Image 1: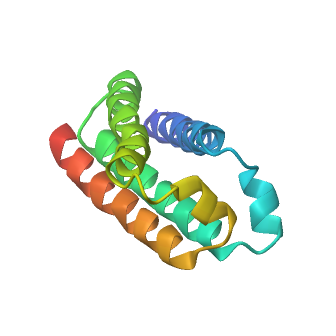
Image 2: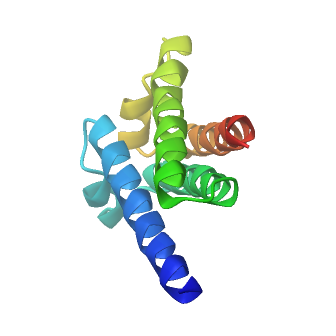
Length: 129
């Protein structure tokens, strides 16, 4: 029975991670996968930061909740906060058009955004515990 619970949790976690990354890809006015195929390192860094931040929130949600439902609920709440991070970052840096710099391959912006996501992933996770 424990193996079934672990497998079910793992499947739900993978689905939540993939859905989260898909939703993040809808935020940008360009095709993330196309930019990756072109070798755009800035987009790769930003996506890596998104993936890691999402995994941090998902891991803490799984660790601190005993049911798949509660894990998913807290992940959803944390994910909304992480999603808002992009818009807040874009809002507080009005002279920096984040999506344009990412599309143009500005690695500095991609790295900064990745660290903003990762940092916020830890901050948001601390609220879930």
